[in-house]
Amino acid sequence: MTELKLAQRMGRIQPSATLALTARAKALRAEGKDVIALTAGEPDFSTPDAIRASAVSALQAGGVVDRYTPASGLPEVRKAVANKFKRDNGLDYAADQVMVNCGAKHSCFNLIAALVDEGDEVIIPAPYWVSYPQMVSFFGGKPVIVDTSATGFVLTSDALKAALTPKTRLVLVNSPGNPTGAVWSREAQQSIADVLKGTNVAVLSDEIYEKLVYDGEHVSFASLDDDAFNRTVTVNGVAKAYAMTGWRIGYAGGPKHVIAAMGALQSHSTSNPATVSQLAALKALAEDPAELPGWRESFVRRRDIIVGGLNDVEGISCARPGGAFYVFPDCRGLLGKRHNDVEISDDHVLCEKLLTEAHVAGVPGSEFGAPGFIRFSYAESDDNIRKAAERIQKFSSELK
Image (cartoon, rainbow, N blue to C red; front, side, top):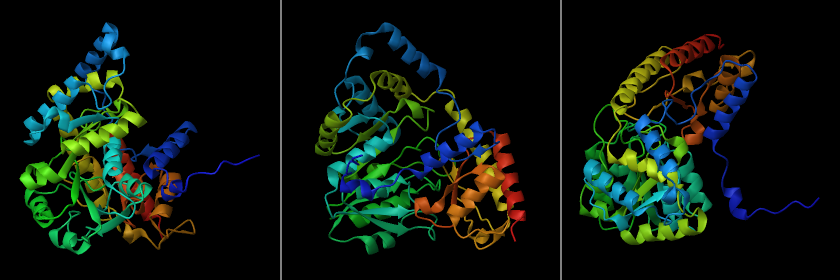
């Protein structure tokens, strides 16, 4: 049987570890195992009633909802995105400076495709979201990983200066961050912006967790000054804040020619995002749903439960994140120990043992550029988070 040859570029990427581990946890649940999956980055709440009702109304009305839209999104949705950027972030984008995508991940993919040539360098602070380096590598770019574990998971100006070269094309900023939940202060971001002045380096500011800030304030990189505004593409979406991960709507704002290039690419790849999802997002973008403050309170409570529980485990140290819904504990104190005669040699083995023995699923820190750490999502019920922490404590007590 003939085996079809794949393009060489496919050798540059690996499947998403987060999605793979989430699928594994679901499979074990299907077998009857009581697995607590703290892997997926999505809220456990339902999309707000008002947003779902607006989608139902659009479906029942028919017409535009049944048809293609312009590749970069319905004009009224692009206008709503521009209004949102102005209202919430102080960013004055015209409608032709914004576009709608099939999720914030799609926004990032389109931007990297539009900016990064073979051999270009992209500075990625680590720990990083798993897809950033994969996207850069896919397009022939070189991920330049900068460790931030000693600086509160925030890129410093000195570290940026050391990483910059004539080949640097793009710097990634993610606040609040995935996987750490770190919130970058205005001062920290301004120090980055000051280093970049006088260069031709672009910035991708991924702000998908903007509405989920508990300590400090959210600051959009493009709002710092005119220079930052002109070099930045701001990426956001409705998935995380409004529990709309399945609706697949993200959006981006930035220089007109960059947005146009992203739109041209999108016209030949996905065409437009789903029309009904755009119309649902229109409702979400008009104003924050009434449920959001209560959701934030729940996330703060859950964060404190899991941070406290993990810090009670000998060998684990867990910082308190300022946003998003992840904790990223340092588990290196557990490595080298043994469980049932199996050595916990690295974070992959640790996550495997936690899944099969303790029935708690997390994502190895190595996937985020931080070996020895684990990402746990606390977008779960209070009871499951408590049980997960108790199971991890019990597992740790059995290590020799």
